[in-house]
Length: 115
Image 1: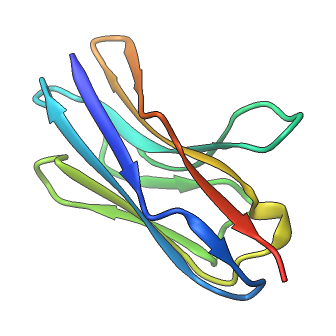
Image 2: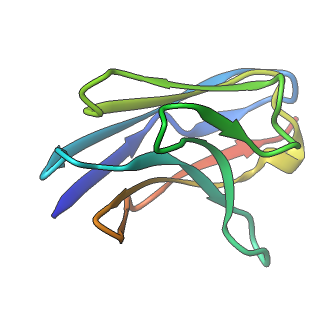
């Protein structure tokens, strides 16, 4: 089992920044991928940014150049630095991990971008 706990969400004005944190615990060895997803009201959950199996990063087109995913080599903490936030970034953000073909999710943290 892998446990994921997100933090760092909140209300921010357009153009502002937030950093989300994800703390992983449990059986974190052999975790293949980790990343961040988000789900806005009435929409499907979508990948925002993630680490691939090879350790590369990939981003949704809508956040490229604004968001940065980074973490420690032990996959204990994963961060999402979000700059230049827009109202359309408003969503619940979820930390995700995949291990042996099983998906693990945190409970989510709400990011609201509004003036």
